[in-house]
Image 1 (spheres, chains in turn blue, purple):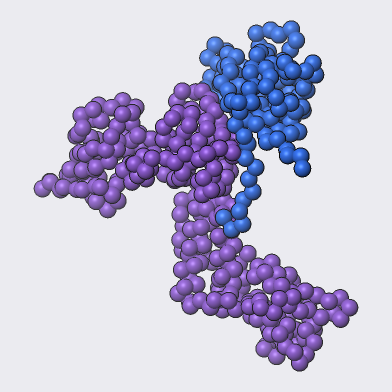
Image 2 (cartoon, chains in turn cyan, blue; image 1 turned 180 degrees about the horizontal axis):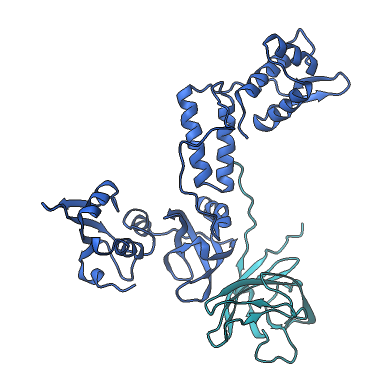
Amino acid sequence: MKTIPPSLIWHLDTRKDSLQMLRIILFDNSTRIDFGYQMDLKYDVGWWINIFQETHLISSVTEQKFLLDDYDNIVIAPEKQIYATKSDWEFFTLFFEPLPKVDQVICMIEAENPDQNNFNFYNIPLNLSDALKLREYRRPYGL
Amino acid sequence: MPITKNAFKRFVIIDQVLRDKQHPPTLKRMQEVCGVQKIEVSLETLSKDIRDMRKIVEAPIKFNPSTQKYYYSDDQFSLRGVRLTTEETKVLQESLTLIRCLLKTELGNKLRHAMEKVLSNSFEAEMQTTRIPILKTMEPPESRGYDHMDMLLDACKERIPVSFIHYSYTKEVFNSVLFHPCVVREFDNRWYIFGFSETHQAARCFGLDRIYAPKFVDKFFRNTEAASLENFLDHMYGVYPLPESVKEEVMLHSSTFVTKMLNANPIHASQKVTKHRNGTGKISLNLIPTMELVQFIRSYGRDLKIIAPRWLAAYEM
């Protein structure tokens, strides 16, 4: 019987200015990336964030682009998520097509020719030896 | 869903009819028996009662469409269960109010449902529609992170490590945390989880409102040191100890008014009050100083002052 490889979790703290890439989870049918965004003091009140629909992942083990499938707590450009104060923060998640569960280095590309505002992250190592395994869990009856 | 006294009387009649071997157990027969007992009821209401019996007391009632007869698929089923006295029923009803207030979780819902089921088996169950509550607790609006409560309770009970994202209000940064939770605690209407943080390599407490996207992790569970847990549960007022603080004696001076207040409502189990002749007091506490303790003391302004230790009196939040 073929065993299904478990979903894998990597804890990260990769930063681009006030954006933190915090966690990557490789599921069988998607790749989940969690981010934290802290409003930056260098920006004026009324600053905003969003993400381009073209955002994708690339992996060192394949030439395939892994496209953005879904998102949570962020908006897609040209919509804007506007912040009211300099202490605002947001936790958001992007879902991409599933990456292979192998040792690899990945990049997240929001824009091929990025300016300072694009959320491009480069050379993030995903080594299987560093990964945690996600545990599937169903509530026991009666708890 | 609470059951009224009248509905329960009809449940008992339906139960009798289903067990009666002399007459066909049909809706019409149930209506006849109700009539004999001076209970006027429509066939529609009886049909709804049967649905409620299936749902609320899990009565295994089946219907045979060809004969139009109802029957129990399990003869062992008992509607009566445990009979409660009037006093026991009242105690349970009041406890239900507390459960509704305090446990707005799946666990709380199940407990409430189970208790309502027990109550439904009592003839003493009262009409609840017009009752004004006689017990009322503070019910703050549901806070962020409370939706993780069931999962974190499961993690504590089943000893499952959890991966989550934490946001620090003070440092204004996020952190991914690998955590081995052991207890969920409420303080001042806020919820916290305490356990061993593998990320920090120490026992830590996190507010549920600052936790995002918890996920169970398949990993060996690490226990929290018993001493750390005891400190957290028994030797603190609040949940966030001040840096480097240890259990020690904290002395306070209180005005007449606050002395009376604290005499009636002690801050901590270790509290001792010495009253002066003018009515003011000296309050002694033996605990680990926390942020919450300092905030509490300062909320009384001049009426409550820290005398010792000196470092705590001078502590700047």
